[in-house]
Length: 142
Image 1 (spheres, rainbow, N blue to C red):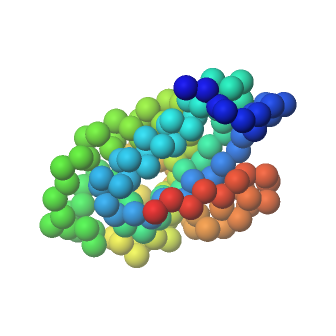
Image 2: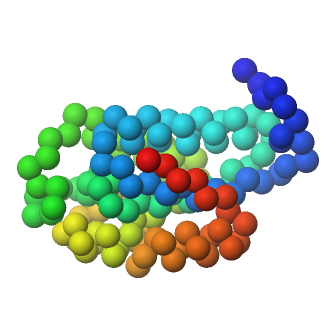
């Protein structure tokens, strides 16, 4: 399927910052698929995507190596392997994935307990502000 409009005409690059906070596995996995699909659409239309994904709140449990001794302790996960595979694929596609240290501290997620593909940032709200002021579209994802 191709775009039905001329929205991509003359566009060479598309910058977006994706803000994730959901703690629902099914929703998060589906939204990761939407991000990947948007990359495919942009590339198919000759546009280079420049994406940053911000992780804060309950979504942090999906990038923790272990939820023991965190506020997520005792939760069961059914789709974690698929989520990790999607995150790895997005990183391979050039998406920068950032986790909020401020939120991690509140949730008891230690810095050394996060997947290696994740960049730790002091406060991703500050990053979101900076990115938006650098021309990144803000994509709120719930």
